[in-house]
Length: 188
Image (cartoon, rainbow, N blue to C red; front, side, top):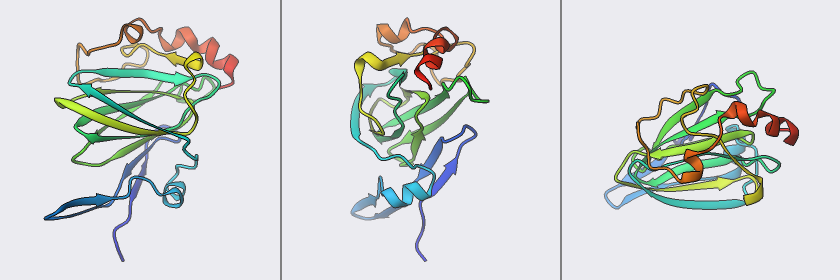
């Protein structure tokens, strides 16, 4: 019997670390980055409707982002380079509200992190540069986007950088506690 994809549920509901099977030889490698039936069996039920690709330099931190009325599940992977990827539970009625999990995703380990709808998501680039690709379960709506400040002391993410490169909007984003009323009114 051949090797199987590993799906490792994380300590937060719905977050799954995916370790695909990588077939390597002297020519290079091959892997499946998504297979609807296998991923559904592994705990990733949502269909994907949008793919995104970002390029960033070392120390860039993107996030923490989410959407209010159109929450997106995201299947994230680093296709070149290495990132520290983070999911924060932003569901106000969840017993793990405000808690986070993180994983190193790289072009060497080929791991993916599934971040379900209702979470905010972000990552920081740990290599010289990184290309990050992610599939989304809902479309992006600029007017629906929310952000949580990367260093919210109530969440206390253990980022591997002290002074990341940030977009001004992300540097000035509110704490999670300051937007909980928005999350509740959106039905998150």
